[in-house]
Image (cartoon, rainbow, N blue to C red; front, side, top):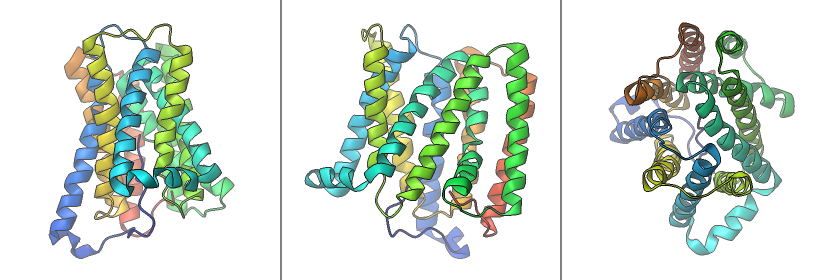
Length: 309
């Protein structure tokens, strides 16, 4: 799960002529790269040998925080970092806490159900965020957005029902917690959009790190699992975020949303290649319903009625 957080003052759209623009093509390559990096979790989580969830979260969070501090220092200069963190205010702190919970829930959801269940349920988070924005910020939603939200809810219900009858309900419950806290974070980021809210993601890593420090039975980890955890933090989270931020400068939001759906195919594919993990038939059905809702909304966004998140 990810969302672009643009620099204040950046353009939020693109013209129809950008299909022939080298900057557009470069942006599209960044977005494709972000989707590929994000999907790597499907492989990485299944090649862990011994480390438990809290130990993985600890080292993943350390790697992510170090990457984000370096990224922010490169963008703004090391001396400007304290001011950048202060500028996010209470909305940024709330977003950081919610994202920290989301980061944590995501790892444990993946450890307790299939990758396909988690990524398909996670794909519905923009619709939940849109609903929260409607309630908290009074942002209007189009009829087509409500229709897409309803369709996505049907897909999630199918997968939850499958979890109740076929096992994996703990993982599905954690996936629902993950998208709920992620959606709240998106609304908090939206409310503070006059400032650069990217430091909030770094705070999220710090909060997840603190939780893992308290909860982990041991921080001893093998070299193999350490490499996997650090790859999660730097590649699956950090580089994915950096590429997505770069790509959204040149690619319209609707196209970003559509290209980003590539991870819904790739993440379960990597899990299948890694350990032969095959989702249930109901997971496929629920996933197809959710993807249909996302594609419907994505094409709707390209016509100028995008989800306001």
